[in-house]
Image (cartoon, rainbow, N blue to C red; front, side):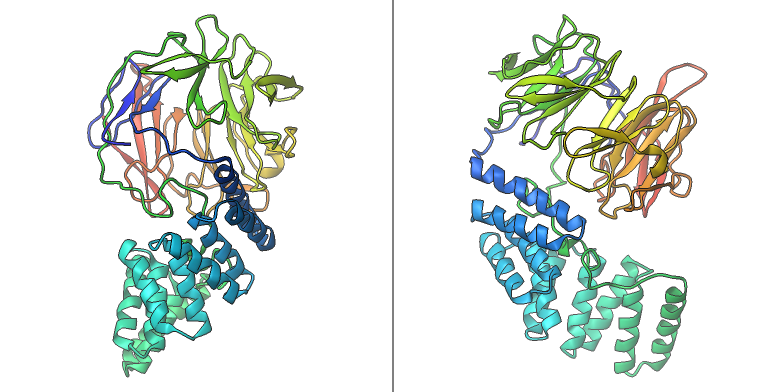
Length: 499
């Protein structure tokens, strides 16, 4: 993307500050960019295997993760992220030498790959064979991400092993500044203070360590997901393992809606229907039926890649629900249905969703398939068996709520799992995933509140690495929509004025 993005819609409200929220019945976002990079079928398959490996790692199935990453590297020998993930899986299996080989291959392809550098540093640190090399690798990551507490923690640990006590204490103090409950940092700082002869400081720090430990807080763990985000397998991104440039300004402008789209379309989504790397639009035609529009020059024209029937559809969501490699659909209408694709044709299968008003996909049980939340007045949480058959597990999962107006899946507590936000007449619910098939509503504790929200979305709008919740409230006096923005800060949400 260069400097602009076109928003094709006539009525756009520009809000104060750097945050812009668009409350529209249908949005079309088209990027003005160069022609997409050509991706071979082998590279596309490699990325699919990499994603499956990340899912396996989240389930702590490190052998399965290793197998998927190995397949990805065989399909694409220049795939740095897959080599890094392979090294992380081998590191999690305790196979340090093999892990080092994979991580070094990742760094040959991408010398600035932070996950590869950090995990290789962990291996050198654990083996005790090359602390200087470990220190250089941790410094490499810290230069790119100076505020990651675990990177700073291992910098301190490595300085301590090299006998550089002053540098170690500086690093541990920085960790505590970044994370005041980091038990391991207090313990390591106390040991460094004792080595430096600062017995008063040692006693004071050790007292804080004891208090935190007695309160139930745990320290850094050698287990997977216990040593920081850079020691966790990552899904593929267009940035090659690097950070996105958040400083580049993006602007929006109005443009006409594409031909073939109903003026008041009930739904609009983007999809690569024929897997050619070009994005199509799936929306509602003036006749009320689904229509696939393919870019043709500066406009769009009807495409024949898909045949999807249906009149009176109120919303539509796409995912590969039966895990056969193509895109299927779930449609909400008078009678909701799942439509499984076979070579461009969609065949309906029986469901018992009822009459859903809204639906969203998300893999809440982390088994690699597309589950969904479907509101039928009461909150519904539907688990996919992997073949496109769904079961409502809301009751046993602890998902409750009436009059649901909108919902969204996202990781809102930065613990690498899928949480669920529901908007209803009574306010917002934030169901935190307990990773055991159940959820806990933590909206009140996280101060996620709103008066009769009618629409919600999740994005990192203030570019601080945490997910925020843009939405809208109903003003009882004027019956007009009032935009609101709930910004996350230290795992709590604060209402910001954006009007």
